[in-house]
Length: 152
Image (cartoon, rainbow, N blue to C red; front, side, top):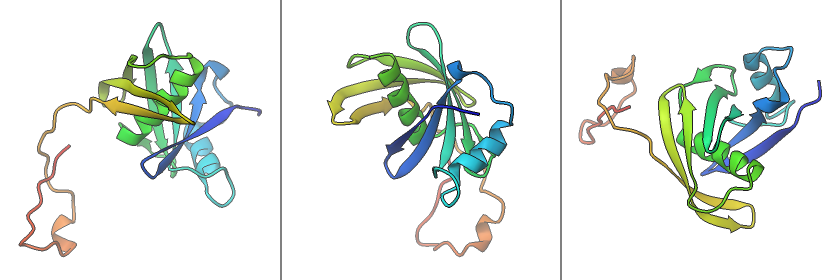
């Protein structure tokens, strides 16, 4: 299988981007994510982003972690996805992309232009909500003098 992938970096995270316009592969996305994201035997990345380009500035994003698990959202990942789409679409500055993720719609703005291969991109991450402590949180030895709030 011959495919085109691009690799993008955002604040110490790196992602592979696959444009779905190439079609669906014969193997599963979790399997391909584990293979391609492996830093020893593959290209190496924190995750695989599937980019869907719709009408105008409408995009879709699906994120598979390097272990093949599906993630709802990644702030750095969505910025990498938009960088790939922006280049593909020959976008202009201040373009706002509407990206459908498994965590809902996100507005992503290309704030400033190319400085070499770099763009400054802003993401509207949605409201912050309180969530329950993760399982096993009490066992990690957090300092009581430094309280923690768990948020989405």
